[in-house]
Amino acid sequence: GPFRTIGRSAIELANHVGGLGLVIARTVRALPRLDPRELVRSVVHFGYDAIPLVVALAVFIGGILVLFANVNVQRYGAKSLIGWAAGYTILREFGPLLTALVMTGRVGARNAAELASMNIGGQLEGLRGVGVDPFALLVAPRVIASTIAIAALGLVVNLVAVFSAAFFGQLIIAVDPGSFFRSLEQMLGWRDALAGSAKMVAFGLTISLISTRAGLVARGGARAVGRVAAVAVVASSALLTALDYGITVALERVL
Image 1: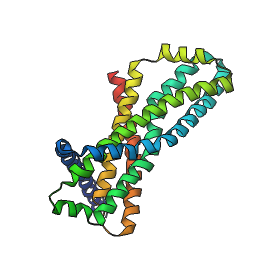
Image 2: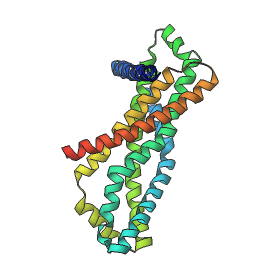
Image 3: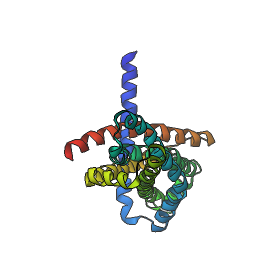
Image 4: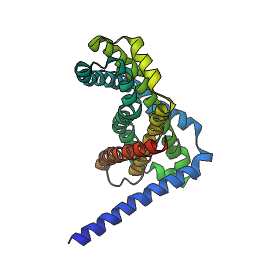
């Protein structure tokens, strides 16, 4: 009946929340013993290799924003506000959220699949057998590295998207780049940059923790690897959307 379905869903949700809490606790406890070599390798693995992808994403973000803005410019003649409108949208909304959603498919799925493969293959259990803590050697470096990588890639997206918007603004709407950046400088402040940075850190930590949890609980054969990767992407995407709304509301009240 419906009560059994609700109860089962509540138990499953509590299980996921509790498991995520355990991952967070064990990761924090392993930080003093974190392997720095694995941290550097993971930053390159998750971040550096994704730079071409996020640069292409940023260029399209800037172009799309200018195309949307062109409608209002033609209607109201608000060319002087293009820089502010593009910068505000990129820094506080489009840049962080779209970067996080794309990195969910790249970083989150990869992290979940790799940990699931090691878990199913017995490598994590083998590390425990020889007295090595998998959280200190593998999990904690991956959580920190993916958070740093996603936050840094978000900054790259913001920077490239703003210059892309300035380029397409001149190309499509004939807005002078000097006017574009003056509007950006005069109407945007440190609060907008801080809001975007806070979102990127929160999004990166969310993706890394959910994908790590998914990989560590994987059971079964080869199909389980693909399954946990898909679960990590879907769960992260859903939570990122809700988290974006919550952070936006909270920052509007605080800042």
